[in-house]
Image (cartoon, helix red, strand yellow):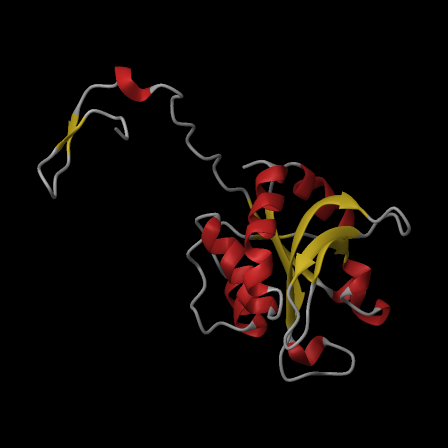
Length: 174
């Protein structure tokens, strides 16, 4: 997976999910082939699952987060509702992307939705978490496989039989 593919997934999920951070993270994850989350998982539920899910690694600091994001890791970050200041009924989750806040070096860039509002695109995490809690944000990363690149001209591929329909597919759309 490349860092640009993560950004592209965020862009594709943005319009339909900009008003709910949990919906946004679930939509991006789903588009990248991550099937970890249930449709009703809110931010707290997402963080609970990430903290124990195989393949997801907690990242120790923002420097590691930025390096992993630049290398194409899928990174979800957030805080549970009780960890926010002041505490809230629901937590907040974001998708970290490549890049550094040019006005505040050392702070990653991210996309997020905002419950009952509008989140932000490719913006510093300083714009979504208060300074009092920035050092408490949980970051979880997974390396996803790169998508399989289909040949540009598949007419040379051998014909395959669709096991359901029993129709031969010569590899072209017609």
